[in-house]
Image 1 (tube, rainbow, N blue to C red):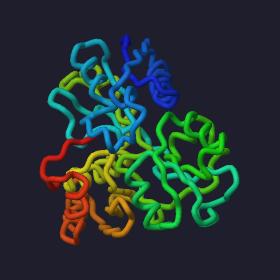
Image 2: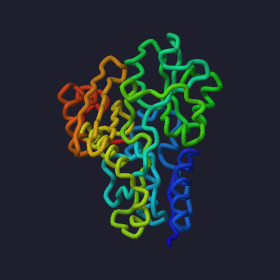
Image 3: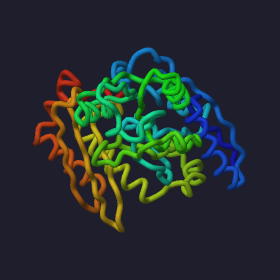
Image 4: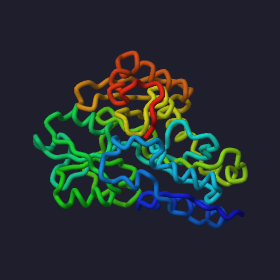
Length: 311
């Protein structure tokens, strides 16, 4: 058995994720240590994520610890990982996926449609903001930063009438009681990789990879690879208004995807079916580009979709 060091962000949710992986590894007889690493995204809290524009802002410092040999593996929310990992790293496992959808949370209102006109709603992502503005242009949408508990406290304090969070994070922290409505993908298309945990290691570290093999879930890997292939085709990072949601039935994948202008004035949706995750993701991405997604993304990137930096 091995002594394995896990690198993790310090938020409550990140530590839940790291401890979850640690518990599974301990069951296999390994000894585990968790090293908390503060990332750029954790340090910048006063502006919206989309304004930061830093590649790998939730992963760079953890990858540095991996490269230096201070940790042996890193546990990430997969949606935080750029679609192209830096040289020297690989995804050893993508774990069984929690709910990939978004959750509507409110003290007073039972659903998004139940919100009165001009209600104040908070969200941390351009993707949600763009889709919210398309669905409910009457709402006041404001940035919402902080960990899950912080965001829930802001709602409790009356700063917002409602907030939108990833259902997976709320459920993992035992706060499912706060969820008033799960937003179906046809209403709010989730982020690529949402709800999945990715375990990153040094490329070629076969000893650690063997210890992690049992954590890899084929269905989660297939659906998230499909979503991330679409994201890569569009040149998108985790803070652009692109939604992607793949489901798996037998050997066939079904992918739905959406690109929306930030103000909600234009929404382009596409879908497709296939057996090869990477080919399906690229094909649906190409359909979106042909229908005008490139123009929307150019407004975000400023210079087109060719080689954007992924936040």
